[in-house]
Structures are given as structure tokens and as C-alpha cells.
Length: 105
Image 1 (cartoon, rainbow, N blue to C red):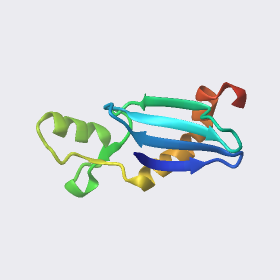
Image 2: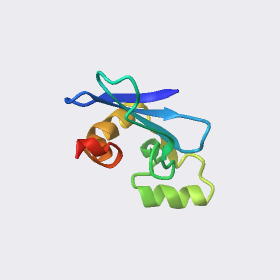
Image 3: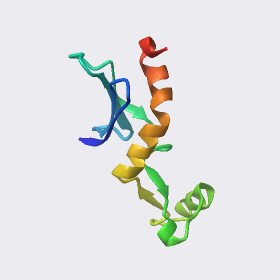
Image 4: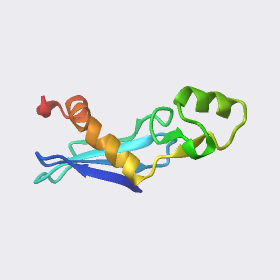
């Protein structure tokens, strides 16, 4: 199930998706190519991606929210929405392409 998709100026489409794994998948395709140039069903760790401190519950930074979650606060984190994923994809697109698509280097 696709969560967010971002297409770079040079025609690469990066898609984050949910799979049967705990982590998040990443698919990279290139405009004009039939096959994906990169696909991994659990490429993005759920420990680093997909959640953020719940500011509405008073958790402003990661460490504070993590400590509260370990102490049993079920509301310390909230899931990223599509806008959060899209912002992350835009910020990380160059690095993801460099790491995952050798011909981009």
C-alpha cells in the first residue's frame, strides 16, 4: 500500500509503502523504464521513520517522547502523515538515489 510518492526533476519516482514487514518499503522507478530501478520491502527502519513526537500531548523532542513511551505513555508518538513522508522524501531524495541507484552517481 503506497503511503507517499515523490518524483524528482530528473524523472525518478520514489515511493514509500507499507508491506507485510514491520519496516517501510522503498521503490524507485525511472520515467521511461519498465522495471523498477530499486525495490526493497523493508528498506526504511520503523525505529527511524514513520513516527514523530506527539506535540499535542506535550512531547516536543524525540528523547522526551521516547522516555515517556518506555515508561508506558501510549500517546508519546504519532504516525507520520502523507505530508510528513512527502517532506522527508523531498529532503532525502538525492541521498536515496545516490545510495540505491548506482547510475545516479
